[in-house]
Length: 122
Image (cartoon, rainbow, N blue to C red; front, side, top):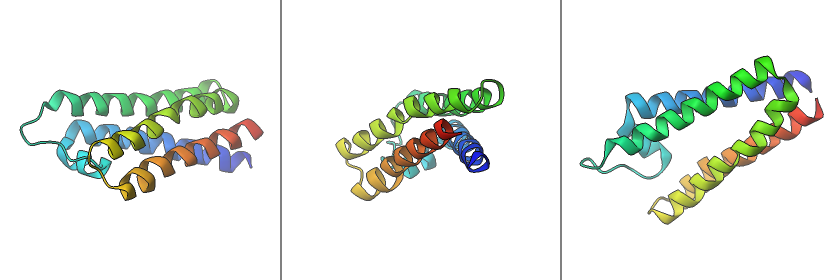
């Protein structure tokens, strides 16, 4: 179970780091993948904010896992699950599809919570 918990945590941390980088370097395609396309003439600062937020979440997760261990990472995952839960509501309230809201964001929140449970069990 230890290998599974650590592997899942690393994969989730790297995935959110990748998503953050994508929002920084390819903001409009990343917004489409998020579930709420950005307006072409919209304020690009908000897409950059999302990129920095997500990249930071990924880096913090990796640092915690490397230097503080599974228990700290479990608490981190428990807290950070609020972000994809909030993203679910954002997509639903802003014209995104239920498939994107639940299939991407809610499913991510559930996966993060499962990861937290596995890390606490280690």
